[in-house]
Amino acid sequence: MGERAAAASLKFVTVQANSASLAEARARVFEFFKTTCRSIPTVMEIYNLQDVVNESQLRSAVSSEIRRHAHITNPKVIDMLLQKGTEELHNIVQHSKQRHHIIGQYVVGQRGLVHDLGTKDEGTSDFLKNFYKSNYF
Image (cartoon, rainbow, N blue to C red):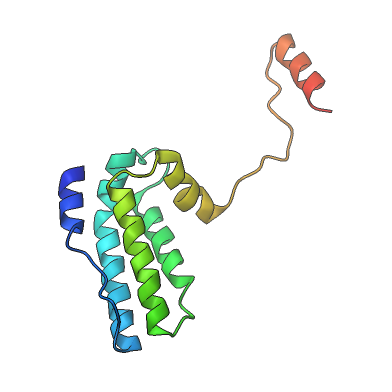
């Protein structure tokens, strides 16, 4: 599915103004999750994410974002969050974001930044050894 086909399929995805009950809002959340999961292959193709993350990891990131708001029981708040999620999905599929935004928000943001606190690879050349010694106090 190309970028245009994905954008065309998402054109009709909207969040209605108000959910009548918590059960209806919950059903809308599940529909949004299904729609998002269906668009993950397109997102991976658009942003060339195959070398960084796989589809199941992106699906887990989306799932964790939804679960982060699981404690909310007000249908109006759920509708507002669905509207924001739908807008985010549209922006991603329409390529309104750059690759590093997606990686930072959904790949690295999920696992947290990995800091190497150990020693650096000092290499084998004398130049690199001197460089590392002079730049790391």
